[in-house]
Image (cartoon, helix red, strand yellow):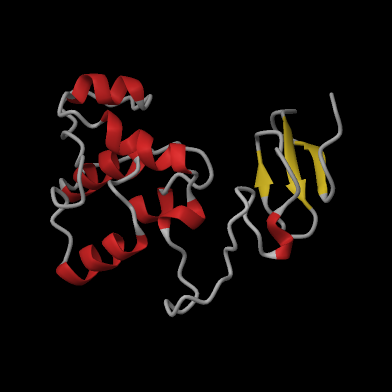
Length: 156
Protein backbone atom coordinates (compact mmCIF):
# COMPACT_ATOMS: atom_id res chain seq x y z
CA UNK A 1 0.00 0.00 0.00
CA UNK A 2 1.51 3.37 -0.97
CA UNK A 3 2.10 6.01 1.67
CA UNK A 4 -0.41 8.88 1.68
CA UNK A 5 0.91 12.38 0.94
CA UNK A 6 2.06 14.51 3.86
CA UNK A 7 0.49 15.47 6.26
CA UNK A 8 -1.81 12.41 5.92
CA UNK A 9 -1.17 9.18 7.85
CA UNK A 10 -2.64 5.73 7.30
CA UNK A 11 -4.25 4.36 10.48
CA UNK A 12 -6.14 1.16 11.37
CA UNK A 13 -9.63 1.26 12.86
CA UNK A 14 -9.45 -0.70 16.13
CA UNK A 15 -12.95 -2.15 15.76
CA UNK A 16 -12.89 -3.29 12.14
CA UNK A 17 -9.20 -3.36 11.23
CA UNK A 18 -9.99 -1.25 8.16
CA UNK A 19 -7.51 1.39 7.04
CA UNK A 20 -8.50 5.04 7.28
CA UNK A 21 -6.51 8.19 6.63
CA UNK A 22 -5.87 10.99 9.13
CA UNK A 23 -4.63 14.49 8.32
CA UNK A 24 -2.35 15.46 11.18
CA UNK A 25 -2.71 19.20 10.48
CA UNK A 26 -6.47 19.56 10.04
CA UNK A 27 -7.62 16.48 12.03
CA UNK A 28 -9.71 15.41 8.99
CA UNK A 29 -10.29 11.68 8.53
CA UNK A 30 -11.30 9.77 5.43
CA UNK A 31 -11.85 6.15 4.45
CA UNK A 32 -10.60 7.00 0.96
CA UNK A 33 -6.93 7.40 0.04
CA UNK A 34 -6.18 11.15 -0.08
CA UNK A 35 -5.55 12.40 -3.60
CA UNK A 36 -3.34 15.32 -2.72
CA UNK A 37 -2.04 17.56 -0.02
CA UNK A 38 -4.53 18.69 2.57
CA UNK A 39 -6.13 22.13 2.45
CA UNK A 40 -4.21 23.35 5.52
CA UNK A 41 -2.94 26.32 3.52
CA UNK A 42 -6.48 27.49 2.81
CA UNK A 43 -6.71 26.01 -0.65
CA UNK A 44 -9.22 23.30 -1.51
CA UNK A 45 -7.93 20.24 -3.38
CA UNK A 46 -9.66 21.58 -6.50
CA UNK A 47 -7.42 24.64 -6.32
CA UNK A 48 -10.09 27.10 -5.18
CA UNK A 49 -9.37 29.49 -2.35
CA UNK A 50 -11.82 28.48 0.38
CA UNK A 51 -11.00 31.41 2.64
CA UNK A 52 -11.56 34.24 0.20
CA UNK A 53 -13.56 37.09 1.68
CA UNK A 54 -16.40 37.76 -0.71
CA UNK A 55 -18.66 39.57 1.75
CA UNK A 56 -20.51 36.44 2.87
CA UNK A 57 -18.89 36.31 6.31
CA UNK A 58 -16.77 33.23 5.65
CA UNK A 59 -19.57 31.21 4.01
CA UNK A 60 -18.58 28.85 1.24
CA UNK A 61 -20.31 28.68 -2.13
CA UNK A 62 -21.13 25.52 -4.03
CA UNK A 63 -18.05 25.80 -6.23
CA UNK A 64 -15.76 26.00 -3.18
CA UNK A 65 -17.26 22.87 -1.63
CA UNK A 66 -18.06 20.54 -4.53
CA UNK A 67 -16.19 19.75 -7.72
CA UNK A 68 -17.90 20.82 -10.95
CA UNK A 69 -18.72 17.18 -11.77
CA UNK A 70 -20.42 16.74 -8.38
CA UNK A 71 -22.67 19.75 -8.96
CA UNK A 72 -23.69 18.59 -12.40
CA UNK A 73 -24.35 15.02 -11.31
CA UNK A 74 -27.27 15.87 -9.07
CA UNK A 75 -28.95 18.29 -11.44
CA UNK A 76 -28.34 16.31 -14.62
CA UNK A 77 -29.70 13.02 -13.33
CA UNK A 78 -32.95 14.46 -11.99
CA UNK A 79 -35.25 13.69 -14.87
CA UNK A 80 -38.29 12.99 -12.77
CA UNK A 81 -37.87 9.23 -12.93
CA UNK A 82 -37.38 8.48 -9.24
CA UNK A 83 -36.38 4.84 -9.69
CA UNK A 84 -33.58 5.61 -12.16
CA UNK A 85 -32.49 8.61 -10.04
CA UNK A 86 -32.19 6.41 -6.95
CA UNK A 87 -30.23 3.80 -8.91
CA UNK A 88 -27.88 6.41 -10.38
CA UNK A 89 -27.18 7.87 -6.93
CA UNK A 90 -27.10 4.52 -5.11
CA UNK A 91 -29.99 5.53 -2.85
CA UNK A 92 -31.62 2.54 -1.15
CA UNK A 93 -34.97 3.04 0.57
CA UNK A 94 -37.61 0.99 2.36
CA UNK A 95 -41.02 0.35 0.84
CA UNK A 96 -43.31 3.35 1.11
CA UNK A 97 -40.47 5.87 1.38
CA UNK A 98 -41.45 9.35 0.15
CA UNK A 99 -40.07 10.46 -3.21
CA UNK A 100 -37.00 12.70 -3.09
CA UNK A 101 -37.15 16.48 -3.46
CA UNK A 102 -35.30 16.85 -6.74
CA UNK A 103 -35.21 20.65 -6.56
CA UNK A 104 -34.89 23.18 -3.78
CA UNK A 105 -38.28 24.57 -4.83
CA UNK A 106 -39.86 21.15 -4.15
CA UNK A 107 -38.42 21.30 -0.62
CA UNK A 108 -40.46 24.47 0.03
CA UNK A 109 -37.59 26.21 1.79
CA UNK A 110 -38.20 29.60 3.43
CA UNK A 111 -37.54 32.45 0.94
CA UNK A 112 -34.46 33.73 2.79
CA UNK A 113 -32.87 30.29 2.80
CA UNK A 114 -33.81 29.71 -0.85
CA UNK A 115 -32.11 33.01 -1.71
CA UNK A 116 -28.90 32.05 0.11
CA UNK A 117 -28.82 28.63 -1.56
CA UNK A 118 -29.21 30.29 -4.97
CA UNK A 119 -26.46 32.84 -4.18
CA UNK A 120 -24.13 30.01 -3.14
CA UNK A 121 -24.65 28.39 -6.56
CA UNK A 122 -26.17 25.04 -5.61
CA UNK A 123 -28.32 23.90 -8.57
CA UNK A 124 -30.17 21.18 -6.66
CA UNK A 125 -30.06 19.26 -3.38
CA UNK A 126 -27.36 16.62 -3.05
CA UNK A 127 -28.69 13.04 -3.20
CA UNK A 128 -28.61 12.62 0.60
CA UNK A 129 -30.48 15.91 1.03
CA UNK A 130 -32.99 15.15 -1.71
CA UNK A 131 -33.98 11.85 -0.10
CA UNK A 132 -33.57 12.73 3.60
CA UNK A 133 -35.72 15.87 3.69
CA UNK A 134 -39.03 14.26 2.69
CA UNK A 135 -38.41 11.34 5.05
CA UNK A 136 -37.74 13.69 7.98
CA UNK A 137 -40.69 15.92 7.13
CA UNK A 138 -42.90 12.83 7.14
CA UNK A 139 -41.75 12.15 10.72
CA UNK A 140 -40.08 8.87 9.76
CA UNK A 141 -36.81 7.40 10.98
CA UNK A 142 -33.81 7.64 8.69
CA UNK A 143 -30.37 6.13 8.46
CA UNK A 144 -28.25 8.07 5.98
CA UNK A 145 -24.83 6.92 4.84
CA UNK A 146 -22.88 9.12 2.45
CA UNK A 147 -19.33 10.31 1.81
CA UNK A 148 -17.72 13.19 3.65
CA UNK A 149 -18.72 16.44 1.98
CA UNK A 150 -21.91 15.04 0.47
CA UNK A 151 -24.26 17.35 2.38
CA UNK A 152 -25.32 15.08 5.25
CA UNK A 153 -25.23 17.85 7.86
CA UNK A 154 -27.62 20.03 5.88
CA UNK A 155 -29.72 16.95 5.13
CA UNK A 156 -30.34 16.43 8.83
